[in-house]
Amino acid sequence: MKSILLHIDHDHAMQARLQVALDIARATNGHITCLQALSYEVFAPGDVYGSAIAAAMPVIKENAEKLRAETEAQLEHEGVMWDWRFVYGTAPHRLLETSPLADIVILGPADLGARGPSSLVGDLVLKAGAPVLVVPEGTKAFDVSAPMLVAWNGSAEAAHALRAAVPLLACSCKVTLASVAEPSEKARFDFPATEGAKYLSRHGIDCEIVEIPRGEARIADILFSAAQLRECGLMVMGAYGHSRLAEMLLGGVTRQMLSEPEMPILLAH
Image (cartoon, rainbow, N blue to C red; front, side):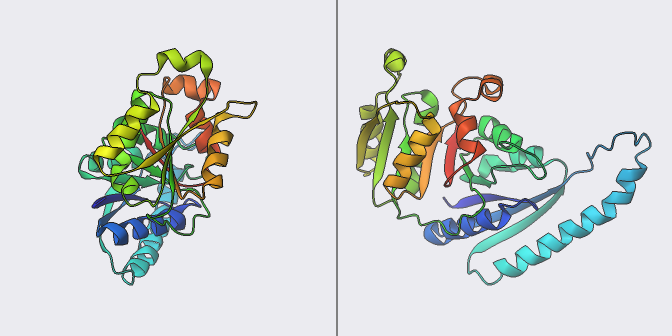
């Protein structure tokens, strides 16, 4: 992962994802592009003439400049290559514009001031060519040599995520391909776990294949438990196997995972 695109914002997971970006950059001799987007698209009910927005913008700019100064001061002492891009516009648009030459995009799990999974994550996973690494608040470090778990359901999305994660999986001391047994869906699997294992073996990566009984728990909880049991530092999974609208309305596995992520999750669609 040589080109790391890091989203800069005031949300609670900012320091966590900065630390993960630094750890990946140090392990891969990578370069971090810090992208900070400042949007004028602020809506205030009843503010027909935009007077409230005009009054708020100096404060918004001041806060953005303060965050930049603090983060740059930290980066100066980290011994990694980095650059800073301050742009006007919405974060999804500006990150998407920059993502074609990124190996990985690092985001937080929730939008600033919003509840539930990040709409930004959804936009980037579906539209960016690079995998998205979601880093929850409280993540203190990212050890690229730690065990890693691939959530495997035989879908094209899972295969895309596996392929995108190879540079990180190659650093891991132990890789597990974990499937949650779903008898009613076995017939529709495009790629059995053995195919995923063969693909990894061609990259010199050995893995363990595990099938976990479905039981009564949510699939997200089953996968997190399996990862924690193996002391994994990363989960890899395909995202939005059904339509994103169906995920949001019905509560698919992607939404479950992002609602309360218990470790960094690498997503690809």
